[in-house]
Image (cartoon, rainbow, N blue to C red):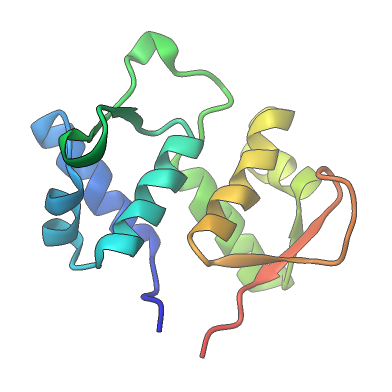
Length: 142
């Protein structure tokens, strides 16, 4: 059974990086209490949103915050993710167009938000449409 990853897990990782300049998989697992596979999902999601960058390979891999000059309007924040999840909780679903309207991110950023939340197991795609009009609903958890 897969662990449920929450925005609090992401916040813990980002706070750790803020305090220590980087984080490893082992440090992530200790700080958040999640397993190896869940920590990889967290890193993949945070890297996809531009919140972290990866350096190194295998046991030498570290994740760190990107330099401020590399942050763009395509970069997703926890506040963006939270706003979209709150919208889904109220409305039952969200499209990428709505993600853009809710958060004010660019088109590219609005496509990244559902991908991040799908990677974390928080949303799933409902139906088939273009990236911009696809509808996303809460993942069914058991």
